[in-house]
Amino acid sequence: MHTPPRVLTVAGSDSGGGAGIQADLKTMLALGTHGMSVLTAVTAQNSLGVQGAWELPAEAVRAQFRSVVDDIGVQAVKTGMLSSPELVETVAGLLADVDAPVVVDPVGVSKHGDSLLAATALDAVRTKLLPTATVATPNLDEVAQLTGVQVEEEADMRRAAAAILAHGPRWALIKGGHLAGDAVDLLTDGDQEHWLRAPRHDNRHTHGTGCTLASAIAARLAHGDTVPEAVAAAKEYVTGAIAAGFRLGGGIGPVDHGWRLR
Image 1 (cartoon, helix red, strand yellow):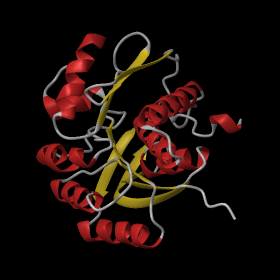
Image 2 (cartoon, helix red, strand yellow):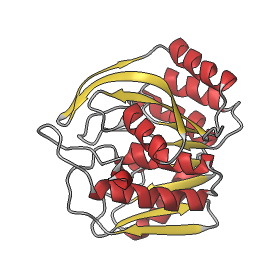
Image 3 (cartoon, helix red, strand yellow):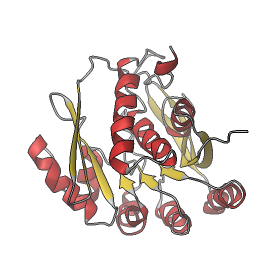
Image 4 (cartoon, helix red, strand yellow):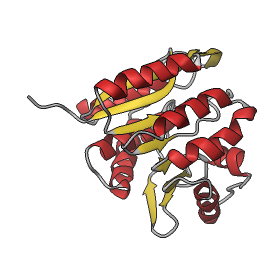
């Protein structure tokens, strides 16, 4: 009997199904892994935005994590929405004892511009969470939020990566999707540089791209890929998911996590 690699997501719920825990689990299934979850928050969310968010107690997050890790085990972990200093510190402490690659998506705002991270939690992300990361995957807004570095053009991405790496992750993936032109990302550990480029698709239905990319990286790491291999495979997967993104509700629809099955 074949047991697929096990991947754990520690993130918030998106009731609309496009991002968060829901996007993570769909991605993990699509990439041949068994997805498991630690819920950190519940959101009332749809294609128009986030109408409400309720954080879970730290003890509930800790209990979920221990329940999964102590019995089932994990071969990779992905973190997403951790809205408060207490949750960031709780999850960082739990990750310190896990012998598996960790992908940290330092979620700051939703696709619709809704804040998902308290300003008071930024220091905990910098000093507690980022040092646990095998790969950190900030977008340009999150880079600015965490480091103050403003990326206006592709050449600025090296400076952004250095600022993120200074906080302790082994690799930084700076996502340049907010720049003009092709969708270009920079993956570096401070020595190696990997520039990943993909054509930009004319599709506004891109809800969940960050969650999907980070989860895809974690899934590929669980399969045994190196970090550069995992990121390249994840970039290919999310590019296809963006191209197949579909209308849902009256606003921004989700990427299509099952596009390879169509």
